[in-house]
Length: 281
Image (tube, rainbow, N blue to C red):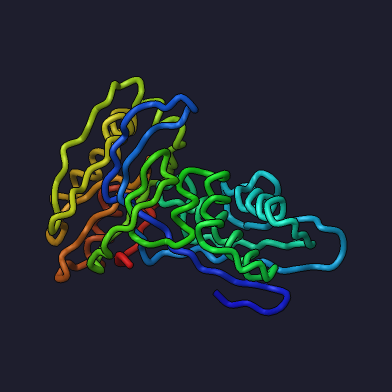
């Protein structure tokens, strides 16, 4: 995080869900989950500037499919922070997107968390992470995780965090077709399918599974084909869907030829396939 008296610039990583168990629909309309989330080396950049004049908030994100202004969760995060703390100022928020929207990587949630962290610094409040996590829970189920962005088991609707050991920095490849999947739809499809729990596979003692894969891949059969293709490739230890999709992650061997894998993936899935070679943080 880089700050001056009038601006702050923050990079927060994306996440993947190494496992995701859906445990049923709650009375509040959310689903009870248990998921192991861990950061990866893919970042959006959020810059917040104070500006003279009335305490209005503007937001700009020049990325297709990302709402600007009041419809963006980052803008709501600024309003929640000001409401909770009583602090106000004219604010300009600029988001440089690298995490694709609708990907199951938490891009919108990470931007909201970045605003809370940035305003905490810019306002001089110095609130504890627990306080910021409570604010974040008002914004979305996985927003609290992004306050610390460390490997954790997330329970409840995703807002209850339990510390977990840091994982090895495994190499990975993220792939996303040119469509996103709305999270509410994915959970409704899980309800309709009737608790299709996924068996787990293990990588160095870590179970890997995602209960949302069966309902999502029943409709989006391309994702099922792409996952099977990834797992057939040399150097791929396993592949799974992150969150509600549509991103798949492949954990790789250190010796994997990532460049060749990307080339072959685009030959298989089309040139519009988004890819990111990286590592767990």
